[in-house]
Length: 284
Length: 262
Image 1 (cartoon, rainbow over the protein chains, first blue to last red):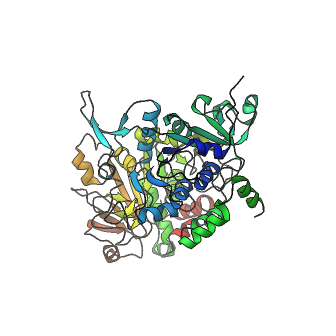
Image 2: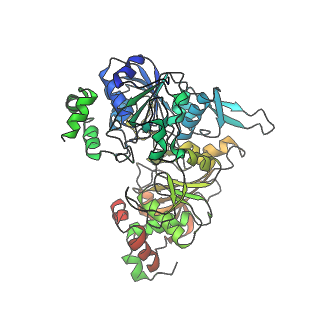
Image 3: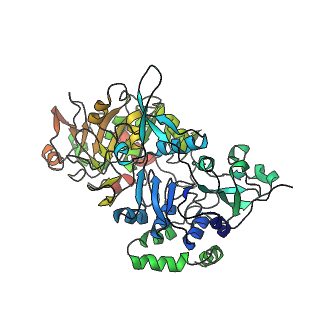
């Protein structure tokens, strides 16, 4: 009998603990596992270290006071260049900041996924990353060139959460949009607690009706739990299933303007369970 | 490029001058990924490929390299895909030295150090949080880089940047010749002028000023002392053919005039 890894958002959150280092998939305001983020917002989890090519995932968690530290290379809503809630959290000194270059970030995930402590690169040499990120160190080549490189440190994650277009009950995942981003590496970098939400769960034999075998990029050995979450990436994009909800994103961005605006947004959209959220969206 | 008459010069809008100046940054690059980021950079890159640098490779702004001359696509628009280039493949391009990127900058100094991460003296609690380091450290240490500054001002051109994201010539020199051998900042294009680093000590130098701009305007909008090229010319203006190509094919929606209004 095949293992059935299906579960709900709140069951995912029950597996997580305060103080964890959590990797979140997607890129900017694209294909973010928002239904699970929303479940975290409703929980009492706190002191999280968030590892993300960040967008509203990081912004929402900061606004809700869930974030102790952020490992990131950027925080952007794409059509709105700067993530307003992350910005507010940084400017008030509320979150610890561990900055990376986008490529260094990839190497940090790759190192963890390959179980090595670091990977060498030129990226970062000469920049202020080496002074502002106290985790970063350099390494000298043991070969005749003798060059000095940045040693991208392995991002060892306690948990990883990604959102894909399709999945099966065993945890295989399929992306149908333009880019996988780094979702497979995030899952690979996590020691456990690896969760994937998907737009739709399909029978394994139906994957190749959805897209070519090239789109089957998440293997079930990297996934501990699968959540069926239709519209689960809302308001971020999840092409080709849906584009970003720009009007909703603007409303979200405006909620960073004052504590009252945030309270209003939170009351309207975040104090609901996922079913309530989606039902309310449908009436907009 | 045809020689423009004075009458044509005065009629050409500043944004179109900037487009050609951007295009010229990519001259001689050949079969490289020309990756201009921003509105006028994207249009300028397309102009370079459509006219004098046909082997350039360019993105659709997301995961595809496309052959089209038009600069901007909606999700439903058809495009001619040459190859697939998701983010992960982009790092293969960047780290193997096959890209010339044009980035923006919130601050840039005389050596070409660039910042778009944060403003303020206390990084732990910045006055203004910006984008983050993005790809600037990796881009500048691995590949030729140019910059596009649509609002040339003393807020951007500063004595010292608050955070070094993209590394300048002084930082590169301090690393030694081996580590810095792939570093080159080719040009800085602004709404006022074209700058380069072609002095003995690689300090920012005014190469040309755009028609209608004086060198004093440039100096006044810059927060440090600029080198000035010996015989200071005006920035070349696009030919009538270039202008038609820009208006009819590359940017029919006139996004360029929203970015540079003069």
